[in-house]
Length: 220
Image (cartoon, rainbow, N blue to C red):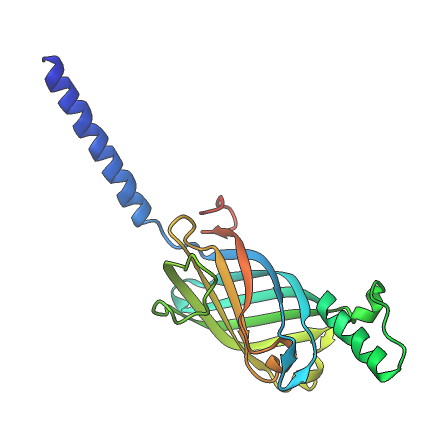
């Protein structure tokens, strides 16, 4: 066999290997276990009242429950008044002739915690643009959406707006991403009455891990 034929054969083999790799990647199963972080701010004004912005930081996890079309979601979040909120509060106090809060005293920022859980929430696969947007570059993988009533605590007890857990708030969670990381972003959007505390806007976060099972390596 001459060198020209050998080069042709080597090139053909390389093309086949590349095609198989692309096909295997395209047919890779969707992960079922997701976890990540939340870092965002609430609006300054909610329902016409200046209440923030609040800083929001936390962790979240989500498990898709196979062919049931259901999922479990949980998040743990801390909240405290932002620097801007403190500056506004100090300016308002000085204008009113009252004692202003201390800017660098953590207690004056009203720190508190929330635990958020959804059990057997509905999973759907929305069309592009159905979930809240991130700043450019835009997401190219629409991913999936999880919606359902959420239990929300405040410092370990029922959140005041839940009226002792008798009134639950709807929560929409979207997980999507781009061409390099198919599942990179998460958004939370609360309905009433929780939206009166967190705001009705999307709360943004990041996917840190996505796995097929608890025993699998991370998928990207």
